[in-house]
Image 1 (cartoon, rainbow, N blue to C red):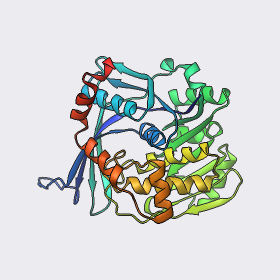
Image 2: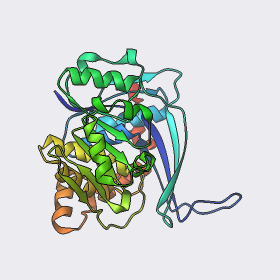
Image 3: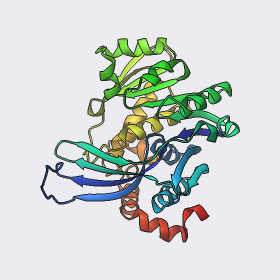
Length: 327
């Protein structure tokens, strides 16, 4: 079996860190830049793999250099890519991610990309999953949810932005983890009441994340909890939610309760935001345990990752020796 299978539309992120976002017709220096893979479920899988879990990705990328980098990043993290398709004539999704240190915010400009079609799903492959992680509940995601549930697996959703399809499919979602943006669209300002209302409609665990304000949720035991955010020097929040999801699922695989999973997820996410991009700052389990014990982040491994991603395009070419569609 595979611990976690994710379905996504992976993208190539070009990350640019600035003091503040530019206004029209201005010129400002770049503080730091990096090339990293992106995508909600895709980045969650990288986090899971870093923490020691077995993962597989179902997705499409192009036969271009960006597709090479995305595939190689999965491979070097030991994520199974047997269901990652390279499509001729298909342009891999590209995102320009501008993050600003002054307001601790970011803006994303993107093009292209799309999830696989329902007809592309490998039913037998999906049946292996203990957990299916998806960023939506319509189309291919809904069909995959049905397949995994029928096989006895569980579904985790990244409800980043409000989508009526997600609310319509709550009976097919086991672990509902949503952002503050989703929460704000629901209109119920009582977090606990909102969690209980959603839980009654299907999910056994409900969690809302609120960035620097921490997270709150309802476990399968019906106990409401809150977890404060860790205080760390923030460089970039890109991918923080994606990494939280991956770390939360890791906790579920260990048999932890919802609050313990949220605590672990918050720690992993806190370490991540100290580095630019969604993946360079993802720690391994040893680093997380040390941080929870001492409050200190061991930067040695993270700095190696930052260096690799700062030149990810060239490093991919050098390390594979050929394009990744030949791997």
